[in-house]
Image 1 (tube, helix red, strand yellow):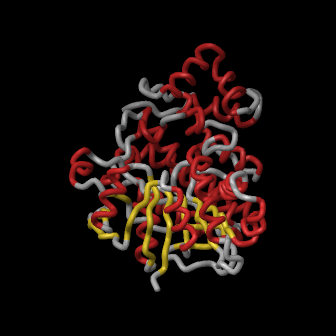
Image 2: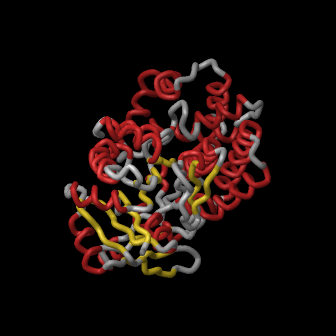
Length: 390
């Protein structure tokens, strides 16, 4: 009897990451989505191409696939009732919209009190996404199933590190089901989020200190990506691979990584050498020309990225708490304050706020730090040192 998986979201992460892991572990995967063209194509072909882009591109065929429209609640509920494994990759705003369907499936499954536990890997860019989704489901679930929800349904948080390039028009026209991804294919998950035995899934890495790995994604990966992109923007680069090949940009990004890796090691007791190896791998991955990642895209929405708990201010504050001076992270934040891309409304709002209230207004209203705080003063100092276009 084949193993069955249900994947909510048949987009870049759903097909481009989780679908691959399910297929390579021997699951039949039912994708749940709303895009009728994708659903139709998956049901006609039961497979799709996955292109791994890097120094040498190659294409995998991901099979044993079918799809359901999320509006077909009875069919999706039946699939959940029969599944061995499930996952979401729909985007945080969509989670409340799929919660009633998850509740219907959980109710159907646990009409049989002896039904096996079911775990959902929650692949969403949100801290505490697992508890959040559990409570959204609870709102729509008959109270008689609440005990089963708490005892037999795991909502397991994951950290998604695989980068997905912007597909060209040529690639989009080549095949409606084609997804392009980078080679990196590791899936760290919260080991304590599972109910029952941890199911087998290729490349899934259950972690005991998962909170540390969530921070590693934000304060190491996302931070260095942002620093490289904001400095790269000031230096006149269009693509991240161009930026990271600029010795000035690369030097600042690498120095910022040294700062946050040291901070993460001190705060969480993580192995510093392993963190530094991860940092070197990130710099290597940013050089992948096939990703075609644009500096403007990575830099967009500086309001969010300058938030008090996000990649720049959050990681800098973490470093300061550990007695580390985040000079180069602060330089990345200073560059973010100079990001004036005309097609990004958030960037224009930051520039308007600076014009009206100075950088002090940004510190107070966006970063939530005081203008006379050590971090604010460090950012102001670095604004005077920013390397501009050659």
